[in-house]
Image (cartoon, rainbow, N blue to C red; front, side, top):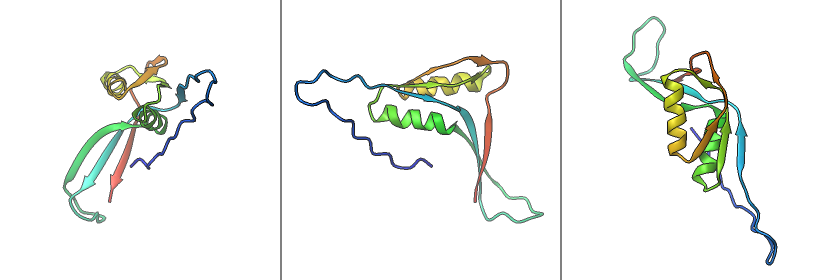
Amino acid sequence: MLGHVNIEPRMPASGAASAIVRAVVLGDLVTDVVLSSSRSLRSGTDVSGTVRFRQGGSAANTARVLAAAGIPTTLVTALGSDAAGDALATYLAECGVEVCGPRVGAPTGRLGLVEA
């Protein structure tokens, strides 16, 4: 879950040249695999639940929040050379984040989360 971010850009003093603000974020872009159980987990038992996939990575989340605040933002990250990497880059572009960085010869990283 993302925390609330309050961003108040500073405006240049009257008569000063306009400042150009752009955020560049360097870091991770992964797929979060979120497992939610229908009831409490108990050792030695099966529990039904749901599996959701969502964009993750602390740097990617930061870039998305900055773009949502109206700040032009670029995320510099290594992208997996698979459909998940394509989908994540497309999603962030739709959120207003420019994504750049090398394509690596490996699948996009995944992080498993269990909601209790």
